[in-house]
Length: 116
Image (cartoon, rainbow, N blue to C red; front, side):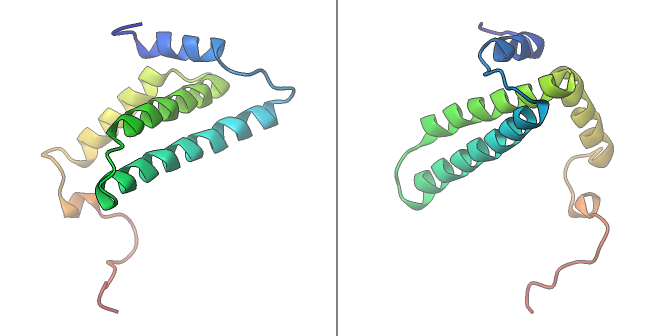
């Protein structure tokens, strides 16, 4: 599946996914699964940099698993991952037309005073 498209990836994910009795249990499984895998990514980063225990291969593996769950969430809602990616690219281009700046990154609310 080298150089496969996101669409091909989504289709493969469907083939490797468990079938659930209800849509509610299905989306709960995908939502909880993606958070668990993201937590595993964070844990591997911590172990690599805070404990001098090289977990870079684990980071890659867990990123792949996170993408699998993202694909299953997209499949659940009948979304095309390529559309999600394209929308995100357009949002980032609009928000940061000349690259990242603190000013462009600000959202509604006030600046945090970290000295309090």
